[in-house]
Image 1 (spheres, rainbow, N blue to C red):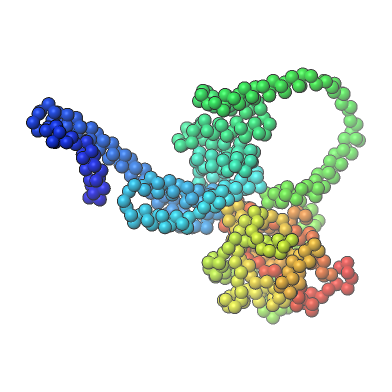
Image 2: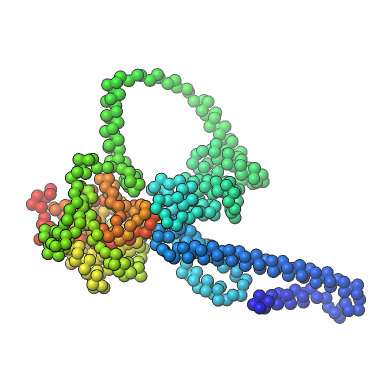
Length: 553
């Protein structure tokens, strides 16, 4: 009935607009003239059939969309955090809510189902924005670089530890390529446009055509200086669209540049190679030892970003067996603390210098859920302190949301704070509140110091509690892949382990900063990373961790 009510105004309008004036033509008086009305009616029926077919096609498309989304959301909501722990799932959610639901709204906008349209319009105010979609896309590119993943691995969802394998469509790959192109990132533009083309060549149906993909791909390759490959893809584009004006011009330009390069090479003076001298066995052995020594020093001399990414992949410096033999695990009661005398905790050494220890099973699942429950409504984009102005601001190198919890809010938070004090022996009254952080798609925190350096004398001036003497970090979730805490200067890597906590001192006993504690949170490849940390300050520790007698301590 609703469909008929919608159709009647259109039907009546068509009839009235086509109906001849009776006073002018007097159709009933002439069969010949009446035959014209039969053809008019036939045209109307044809138009009506087309209208019905168009509506049915539209409804069929909407039905397919609804069925697909019903299946997806049913699976996703069974374990939301695990589902969104797959970065492709998170990216596609941003893309769906920001772009595809808008397309669906446009498709059914002519429908008078006011309840659905008004509800969708209201809900869209709370949907992800273009910035969210772009941010999720860039997170995928970041993961690709950090973990040395090829585009096909990500597109086919073959990531380690995934529970909900998801395939990327041609449109998804094209979207990533376009975002990279907008950032003048031709390297990633090539990778993702090539992946989109590969899937089109394999027969995947898409609204994106090969001509468009080849246009971006050839230009990205040209921008990276590979004229011959750019020419090959441009010629392929012209095979599909011989009238493509830009491609025609590019072919001539690429051929001209290649000919120019060829002539330049011919004019170059050919330098004869000197025959290689045979090396004696003694010289070979010496060079081999030098190479081994060079390999050992290679990691130390690398740029920090490269060291950071290597450690995130599980590469980089490994402890020698001799150093590793000095690391121990033990039952720990912090010098016979009454609370842990009968029930000591498990403690293990993670690294020797800086000295990093891990406490196992130190926070229960019940406590973790309570902390997350308290923090979730308050999670806000994590900020960093500008070293120049001291103002808190967001940064692209810290991708997470955080919240602060005080001991006054819940007795459980107070018990957690007391536990940290009992096990470290440090005063918590001058420490910062418990900070809870949840990392997003490809969530990370690039290398940084927790303490204020000499060039930041006012870093914690407003707190009035001195510098950050130590860091306590709870891991409140396991992470399927990625998400390690790494120390690039020394090559240490600590993997998240739910229920455990790691602890280290940021300052030497003389109050100077320990620069080897520079650390980072690796991007989360698969999974959902929850942590909470306590930054402990100098004030109040005078009798608990006395200064060293020597200023060089």
